[in-house]
Image (cartoon, rainbow, N blue to C red; front, side):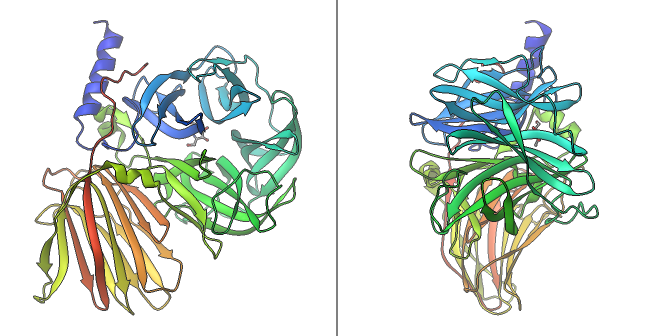
Length: 507
Ligand code: DQQ
């Protein structure tokens, strides 16, 4: 075996042996994965392209990996779609989208060369397996009349018989933005100015609502309250609202995805309100959504790692996709997300809980065991009542991740405490906190555990995070209620793994 082949085999083997690699979430064969790209459904088949480095578990010389699925759960690798060439993408093929150009599959992406990115285009074969990039960018420079912080990532749609494109950016001294362009043929573009400009103000890296100085991975579409999302085109019904999802970025910090909701007049977007898309912030970064053939708006995002480079290097892999989620606007105009219903198809054994007594001797808790688990329950919380769920916990509590839901004077608060989530050094153990909108006492809670990934959904509010327990007995799930609180209909299932066998770094 030549040294490169031996290195590839070692990386794949290390990834397979890592007990913390998710079993039912999509990961690359090994190496590095970041943003979902070109997500869509063509003739019934779902396509997931993704930012991929097959040469190691670090961000470098980014390719576009490609996988297909019929059920959003089981994926088959396809050949790498894009690789750095000698042209405008010679340093990497960064994020972008897939569109249907009158029957020709077409990718619009950010080609990186000379330390900056420019919009590029590649055309594909009918089966989306072979791609031919154009040597020259389709927009040869960022807008000249602004001092910009960066210029990359794309959202492309049809509007009034023409193509429209947004490119994520930021204006120095002002805030994040997206530049709007128009084209007849996807190759020659006219700039129409900024869609909207954020207000960055002072640097606030720890503020989960800060909109940052640059907007990565802009995703623009419209939706009606109580219905699934359509395209960004303005010819919807009068009760439609427009939504701009972006990932707030600042000088190399990938901060968190946010959603701006408002109205669009064909040139400008007037923001009415901004909300967090996921209370786990950077662990659900760079989301991209599409409308599937059944009309659902489905979103993918990148579950960034939270362990250090040395651990990632040993593991041979980095990055997983969050479960694909269905998006909808509730009747109050809040953007909700929940795992696609297909996921229940992975449920195998139903987990039997054991009743636990509280420290006062009263029955008040349940205990399950498992690390690849889908669990749901209803929490009924009166004033001051709380529910606590310990996850990935050892029997002695030396390792445990704690989710707490508490009803206080203002409403329902959630806290995810990772301070004891691992005995390993070098992991991100910061907490996530947030509020769950709505006045009711009942909350539907869904938990997805997958070895090092944890996704929580409470009444449509998502919290995605990563934890790295070290002990093999860190498999307890303990639910405890405090004060005016009770749990109804708790169920949990083990989920089966979905990874294709015999994967190669360059399929
Ligand atoms: N990742 C890509 C960029 C994008 C960033 C590079 C977001 O195109 O801005 O891999 O994670």
